[in-house]
Length: 497
Ligand SMILES: Cc1cc2nc3c(=O)[nH]c(=O)nc-3n(C[C@H](O)[C@H](O)[C@H](O)COP(=O)(O)OP(=O)(O)OC[C@H]3O[C@@H](n4cnc5c(N)ncnc54)[C@H](O)[C@@H]3O)c2cc1C
Image 1 (cartoon, rainbow, N blue to C red):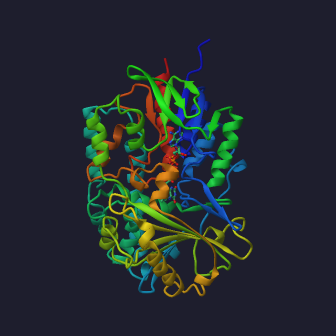
Image 2 (image 1 turned 30 degrees about the vertical axis):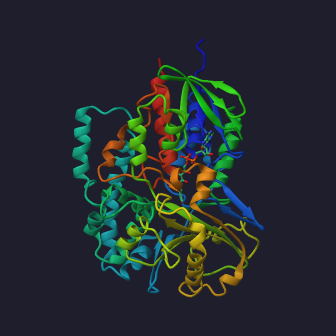
Image 3 (image 1 turned 90 degrees about the vertical axis):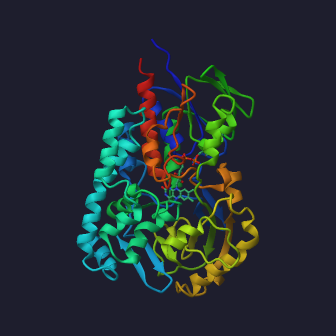
C-alpha cells in the first residue's frame, strides 16, 4: 500500500481552509497551520457591548461555488449553511439626494434605473447576456487554466479576449450599454473603490456588477464567519490536523523542494506538498529570499498595490428604516473617486463610503431594536500616508454629519453606544497586509493575460499558492473558494503517479 502524501498548508483563511477540505477528501493527509487562535483570516469577527461585527467581508455572492464544494465533499449544504437572497443587492445614495436601489427583481431594478436611463429593461438584459458569456470564460480560463499554456492556447485565449471585448477599457464597455452617468457610476463604483481604474483597466471586471445584479447578494445568520464555523466542524469530521496559534517561521529545503516547515513553537512538520494561503509578497520575502532571484522580489515590490481601508464599527441604540443591508454614499464623480486612492489627503477630505447594516436581517448580532453598522472607507495605502490616526477624527465627523443630514438618519451621533476604528496600520499587525494594501497586487491593463499560470511556484517544485487575493484584484470569498478548487485539482493531478 502506498503512503498517503502529506500537504502542509500555511494560513487558515478561507482559501487555505477550502483547500484543506478538498485535499483531505481527495485522500491526502492534511496539516493546516494558522498563526491566530481562530481560523478564518480576514473572515472573522469583532465583538463589543453586545454587538457583533464582521471584521471585513460582508458581501456573500456566487453561492454556486459553495454548492459545488459541498457536492464534492459529499455533504448536504442545507445542514450547514442557510443563505438568503437579499431583496436589494445594494442602495446607492448620491450627494444630491437621489438614489438607486438595486433590487433583485428585474422589473423593480429597471424602474430604479429608469429614473435616470430610458428603456433600462432592454439595456440591462443586453448587459446581462454579454457578461454571462464573459463570466463563464473567465472562470474556465483565466482562473481555471493554471498550467503554462502553449503558444496555440495563448493565441486562442487572446482571440477570445477580443471576441468578448475583454481588453476594451472598462468605462468604454459600460458606455456601450448605458448613457446615464449615475447608472454607469453604480456599475463601476465598487470596482473603482478597490483600485480597478475604469478608465485604464480592462472590461474583464464588468462581470462583477453583472454577477451581483443578476445572481444577487445573500445573507447568512451570524454573518460570513458562521461559514468558517461550519467549515471548522467539517475539518474536524474529516480529521484534518489543524494547528492554531502557532506560526510558520521558517522552511527547510532540499534543492528546489521544501521538505518541512518550522513553527514558532519550535515544532517541525515534514510534508510532500506545501501550500501558502498568505500574501504572496510577504511569503516570497520572508521564506524564499535565498531561493528565488532578487529581481523577482524587486518586481513584486515595485508592482502596483491596491488601496487600504479604514473601517468604523458602530453599535447604535436604534434602527434606521431608510438603511438597506448594503449601502453606499457617493460624494463625487467616478474620476475623483479613482484619484482619491492615490492622493495625500488632509482633514478636509470628504470621501465616498460603503456602509453595511447586517442587523436588518439578523437579530443575533445586536441587542433587540438596535443596529450593528460598519462603515468602510477606501483610502490610499501606506506608500502615500501612514498617520491616518492624526487626520481621521475630522473626516469621521464629516461622515457622521452626512449620515445625520444627507442620509436622514435622525440623532445618528447620539445613538452611538459602541465605536471601534481599524486603521491601515492595524491591517499590517493583524493580517500581515503589505503596506496595508487590502488586496495586494492589482492588475494593470495587460495583467489578465499574465495571470494565467500563477498557482504553482516558478522556483520551488512542491510549492503552490491558494490565495487568489494577490493575483486578481477585488476578489471575494467566493473567488477564493473557486481558486482553492483549481489549485487543489492541480495538486491532485501533479501528485498522481
Ligand atoms: C476591505 C475588504 C473588503 C472585502 N469585502 C469582501 C466582501 O464583502 N465579500 C467577499 O466575498 N470578500 C470580500 N473581501 C475579500 C475577502 O476578505 C478575501 O478574498 C478572503 O477573505 C481572503 O482569504 P484568504 O484565505 O486568501 O486570505 P486571508 O484571509 O488573509 O488568510 C490568510 C491567513 O494566513 C494566516 N497567516 C499569515 N502568516 C502566517 C504564518 N506565517 N503562519 C501561519 N498562518 C499565517 C493569517 O493569519 C490568515 O488567517 C474583502 C477584502 C477586503 C480586504
